[in-house]
Length: 75
Picture 1 (cartoon, rainbow, N blue to C red):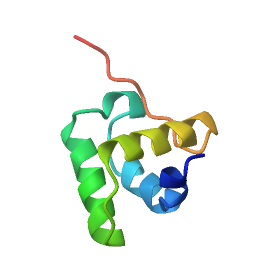
Picture 2 (picture 1 turned 30 degrees about the vertical axis):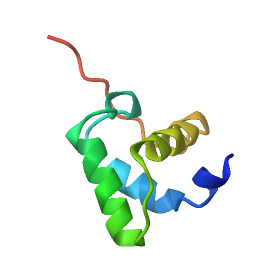
Picture 3 (picture 1 turned 60 degrees about the vertical axis):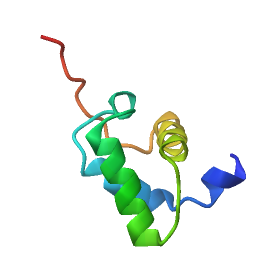
Picture 4 (picture 1 turned 135 degrees about the vertical axis):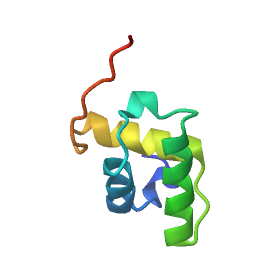
């Protein structure tokens, strides 16, 4: 794990992610992604980027640490 992702509070990030209705794959460029980043930075008085959030969430998902969310179906 890189030093950037090591400094991220993964429990807080996981909590913020769980409050959103999207899967990790659907987060990039979404309003929910922006909300996660802004909330995290405000709560931790830190500055993590959208990229750092996405990488950390992908790593959590690979380790089966995220709740499963249903995939949205295209209509």
